[in-house]
Image 1: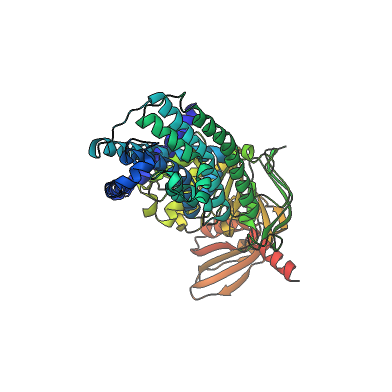
Image 2: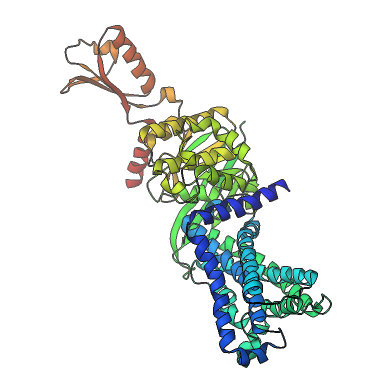
Length: 271
Length: 319
């Protein structure tokens, strides 16, 4: 147990926080990066309030509440998926990947420890977005805490495996990651983070229904804005749990295969 | 009989030409290499650039999987059970890019040794004896990006020493180091060897290091082992003895260095002799010269055993 805590500490606070804090202007611009989209969508809400309100009414009482919950949790998922592959890329470029993989800590454990820092950082992001929503933009939350916590954990867990697949792809191909692009950048638009998926063209809508985040956000809006209980969102929790059962083993398998592949190719230190 | 800690059995490694053309290859980087290293032994891997020294070390470290053949680390099959094998190995690569640039020496060691579950106190205890010897006590507080190349090499060595593993892989540990630091590193490897608990596989282009530290030299050429030879004890290794004395001094060559050839130099007289027992013969000659009060301008042994082995390999392969 001691070893697990020690490893969690070195990944989160030595490599994560310490390195992050050496970049002087990083904190400022990171916070700006979190909050600017909130204000951007706030202005969109003001200009198009009438058109958007009808579309969001099944999910939230106001468009602002709709996108605040969406942005807070989409940020988490985006960070999980993109940060793992970005981290692998950074380690490749810095030459430290060989020394990570040289240790007896298994590659999958390294990935899991690697997630801790972006998760922590994005918890701050989620909190900041929600606080701005509540105190500056007047969003009124009506939260069922238990259901929200369970859903949040399931939304994150169902994306962990996808993050591992993205990391595996980076290990294998080094540059250009379609998994990361799709689940991190593109997911803002197709997961219903900032506008309902019902507004999307039919073909794209079907893709968005296949993404765990889409269902996770629908359920989270219910538990955070309408106080829905766990019982009311049970079908969503089952869907997310099934997504976890599929994506996590698949992610672990993909990363192990990619690790074995680069060892055979001799490209572990390549970038 | 000493335990075998590293064993390569008919190991071949063929790298693909590109990632896309997997069927085509660049030829074997390592070809049918069989060798072993015993507990307490320092094995020097020698050879020209591209001979396969680093590839062989990376295979032992499980960072590269061989195309065929077996590798055993303390009896563990390192291909099938790579994670277990990694628990026994520490590796100082020859790359500058192996630490986090914005962390200082301590935090880098804290991170990388932490991957093995080590606490800061354990790390401090393990490297304390070497901090002054390597002149790294103050440098440990410097961010890696500000460290000199020599300091970076020493930090890589400290990481390896901190882990205290039975198999130590060193890839050109003294490259880019000033002569004093290189000597310190050599003396640390000598200490490890004297303790007799580890096996050190030392890839080097520095023949002096190999001569000084290794019990055995393995010479690689184009991925193949062309010579693997136990080195004779250092005190009776071959070489060419060269002694230079003042021109005015009277030296009876038959008494001082029997069989030596005498030549006149700008500064004085030089006596040169090829010897099977170079170190002892040089020491005996110096003792006699000192006893006679003759001032020695320089004394050296050139063309060491390892150098001669290397040369013989080059001659054999060109024939």
